[in-house]
Length: 186
Image 1 (cartoon, rainbow, N blue to C red):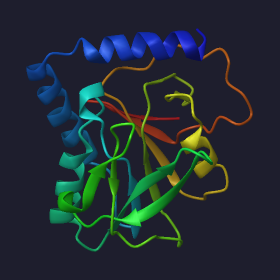
Image 2 (image 1 turned 135 degrees about the vertical axis):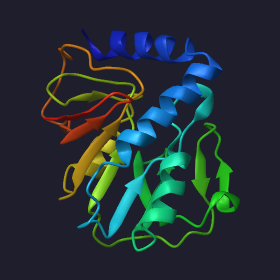
Image 3 (image 1 turned 90 degrees about the horizontal axis):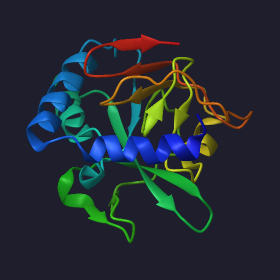
């Protein structure tokens, strides 16, 4: 299938998830996330969810990390839609967040992080069995990841699709994807 078709179907499928099922899937996703080995992780990049679009509730993961691994520096993205680039900012908690024009929560006062990143939790609408993903189509994460030597882990409430047909050399492959039922290694 083509990314444009996958994108439409994935959005439709996610929006069909009931509130109760959404909560259950996120709790199961958190349970899988807690099994990841964080011993070599000093800095972790994680996206902030657009809950209205039924994106995985990464606040649950952030809370767990803050409690169980306070030594890990958590950074979150801020998007520049003019350049289609992201900056990383130290996560200071929910009180530092504000929605931008696209309804995406972004840090307001968190210090910009220009250092190494060990692990990136990558957002996606869908992913295939080879580790390629479909996002919203702006390429923010592909540009961010292309020269980054970090482990790349996708988060998905839905299972893998068979194949994304229009993968290009610019598409960055995931190392793993966490779903509510398993962690898939590519």
